[in-house]
Image (cartoon, rainbow, N blue to C red; front, side):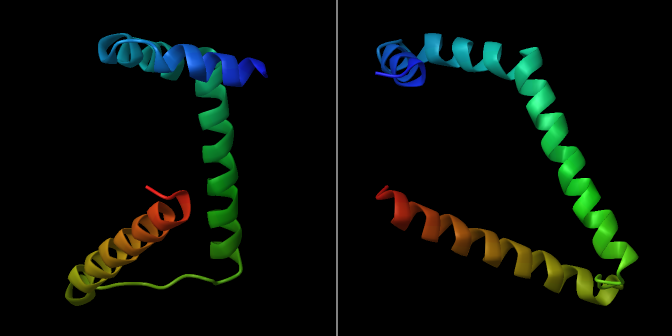
Length: 88
């Protein structure tokens, strides 16, 4: 059994309050913050590259509501599909 599997098994035996405490500890850890910062930097680099290549769309006030609806619909669809794949 890998270390990660052992940690998962041990965490499953914790009370909900202890699980929350463990989660808070992890997200406040330096390792987690470094990983999140690295991921953010990668995402920003991709976005800047797309801007530099002219791969963007501008929106005016009349289209912002439609954009928000499209993003929400897309997010709900992705969530639904990910739940199907994971068997949830």
